Image (tube, rainbow, N blue to C red; front, side, top):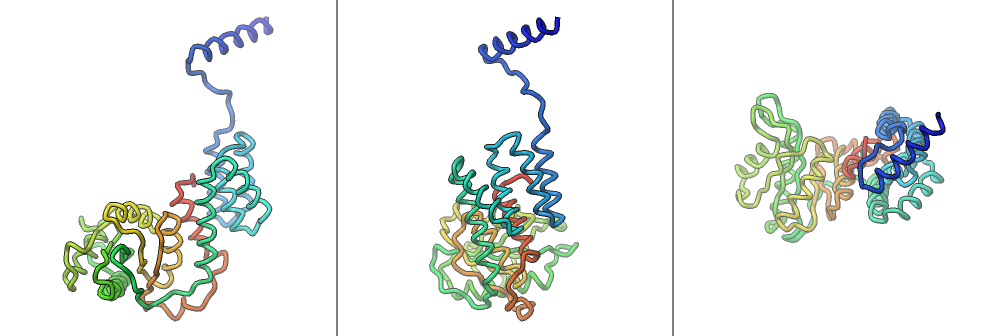
Length: 286
């Protein structure tokens, strides 16, 4: 009887597939659960545990490009060069474009971890945007001193490059006012023409600043950017924008906290936010 039922089941499956019907795949552990476990472990500072969960996902689907990309990123964070190189090689064989984007992220993290903040404006042309990153507003919609510092620094860069567009980025509205709206109004009050200042109102994080601003840059025809933010934020911001496909030709930090941030080479613990943001910018799960 059992043999007969199995035979009937096989025939039904064969007919259904031949007829183009949708048939449920055999049950497996949901890959999303493995990704969630991996993200939880990585966020707790355990890249090796995270890699173990991704290995489980890859046993279910060895060609899962998201799992391979994350495995390479987690391995880079954990100094596991064997796993990193294996992941990149396998990823490149399946999706060379995604492998290139992961390489861009990892190279940017390494470069920025060794690059001290720069307080000086860059000499730039009209296709390079001056891009000022937002900072959370007060509950009444007023700007915090940190944000005013970023705007003051960005204004100096804008005056040094009068042909360049200026982009302000940040959502997180307070009393109906986004960071970008408050920033744009401040820059106009301090002498920039309204037509020169472009506001990006949707981003709610540094990774979002990069993704949303990259799209805005394409719309206005800007081909590169100078990033403006605080010294303890500038390297992470540059990594995010490079990962989002923005050529960053300059990075100008405020003087707020500059001395404390100018010398250190960032260790892996301090680089963690760069990895986390990069994962978000690349649209990878977790």
